[in-house]
Length: 273
Image 1 (cartoon, rainbow, N blue to C red):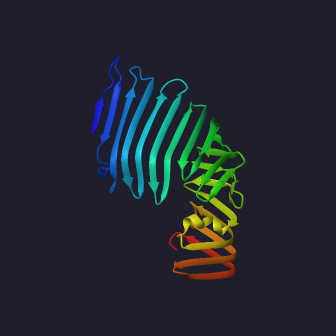
Image 2 (image 1 turned 30 degrees about the horizontal axis):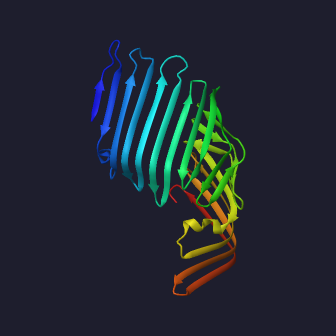
């Protein structure tokens, strides 16, 4: 259901959208969404708010959600946004709450993402409009995850190029006590590149395996992707595992063990291959 009340002199304009069955918009989806917006009588500000409930779509479940915010249509165009989702489930992972807040104006902006549940932590980004686009920073962070606590210890420069419609992210590393995951300089857009390297103990992946399987050993890997030009998408990756051991418990005392001193895997993929 969509309801429009046109803006008139000395009276605000109103837009309301009610979707009682999300499946009418998203195939296979269920849930309810309610949105409303108000345009000030003097056309100086737009405010909005909304809720969602019992959303289920493509293995994603959200029990409740709300959004609210405001945008100034004059002056420095100040804005604010507050979005909260609760009871999120996806393929065995659970988040009690996921919250995104943002505020700023046409010169500088701040944004923060907070998560509580299987992934517990926050990400903070600040930035400002710059010649030719935007420049900002991803601030140091710490996240508790099913595989342990991961830390980003340095500030990561970010930049958006309006001319090329590309976001660049400087190289950086996430680390825990035994492992590290490092991204090279990222260039994200219709064309771009990304690279990733990592090393650590295979046992940290236990939470991703069936309870009957135990995995031990050391892992090193690297991967690189390029897209947007000939030959289209190209992905190259290789991994080396040393002192690899896989133990499978079938119950009733039946256990099998396989060991390798070293194992190397390599793969290349491209569009159409």
